[in-house]
Image (tube, rainbow, N blue to C red; front, side, top):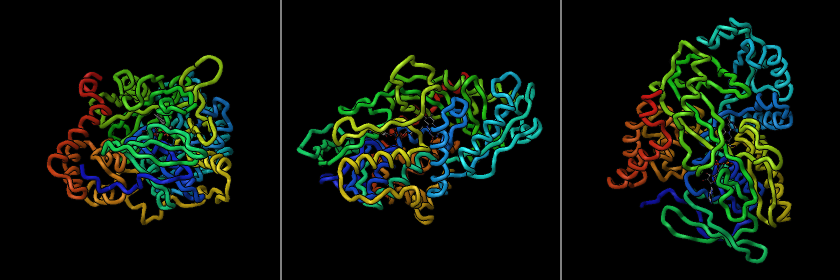
Length: 491
Ligand SMILES: Cc1cc2nc3c(=O)[nH]c(=O)nc-3n(C[C@H](O)[C@H](O)[C@H](O)COP(=O)(O)OP(=O)(O)OC[C@H]3O[C@@H](n4cnc5c(N)ncnc54)[C@H](O)[C@@H]3O)c2cc1C
């Protein structure tokens, strides 16, 4: 296998080894390297291939958590939302939300009006302030919404991002600051060697093991943390599924909140598409095996068709789906409770000297999670480290971010060349799923895969055999993540 895109050093001594190339690990690597720590990050598969490319793509304070009285969490996430808007404006676009109120649905208009006012106060304003909406105003922004019992609603702002791009740009920033970042390298285990640790790593592409020594280790393995030898993290995993349909089928001007009992679902405009999400159910399998099941799809279709009765969205309307696993901190005491009641707060622990577990949290709060983790690492290592500047340092210059945006880039060889040259690409699915989202956005993704493989062959030096095996690998991935045809026909 030719590997022109690998630029990490396999060996050496580091102040910190970060396990996991999702948003949390990327944030830690960026912060640590910017403070002057010799940093290495390893990701067992592609960067962002875990939960951090399967979210709802929102930077949000979490209006639902307000109703649960989790004011501190909302405030924290809201501040971070604004900070990300400042440091990564290309990946944080203000997004208006319409929250409709129906009679007897548990979210009356007066309650929503108080809620969004409080949200404004806690959150600061990423764009306009919130406002109350009459019934007609709601229908103008969300045509086709169920009119029976509709009393009006409110409009408030959060932001839309691109989760995988946020990870990749954070890693670029980490690498620019000196971090050694490696995808397709697994942390296998470690042994103590005086004040440092000998960490065993495995290059999963070549099959070659190698070791590095590290003065500290940060476990940012997300849903996989439970499988790490020294991790003290106790998680409760919950699954979330999203559907992507053509925007023409639900021509909403703003994102729309759909109340579902105590939960809320969203219809999120995404260029020419709309994202419908999400589910929240307990998950006990391997995180890499999570898929969109028939029940999940049926639940989301039922909810959206109940809110937009004339739309009659069916399985045949699906452009794509994705499923992800939330790595939520398991409650220490008491009854388990519903998945949606679990806190989205994070937890940082030094379970043994020099080993730090960071778990839970949200995409929105990753920078803060990283700052707090690296504070602890610096305290442990002692020394004159620089202070944290991630809240004020742009993630990328506008020129460097030319192929990094919320919506997928225009399909063509220029984008593919850029990712092949600059973005640690190894497999076809690295481009189609994480670098571009074409797999989720484009209706003829299978056809586009053929062109992409052809261009990648040119830039990465693949022969026909390798291009063929990449297409096979992609279609396996595609079948796993995608809605099965049988489900598509049945629903
Ligand atoms: C359905 C859903 C919707 C969501 N929506 C939102 C939202 O809109 N806004 C928001 O703020 N948050 C949202 N979240 C939460 C957010 O996506 C997660 O909190 C976040 O992505 C978790 O990031 P992470 O880095 O902890 O985990 P991950 O992204 O899963 O990263 C962990 C990585 O560690 C790697 N790894 C594991 N073991 C090893 C090993 N031994 N060696 C090397 N690497 C290893 C894994 O391969 C993985 O890539 C959502 C989550 C879900 C599931």
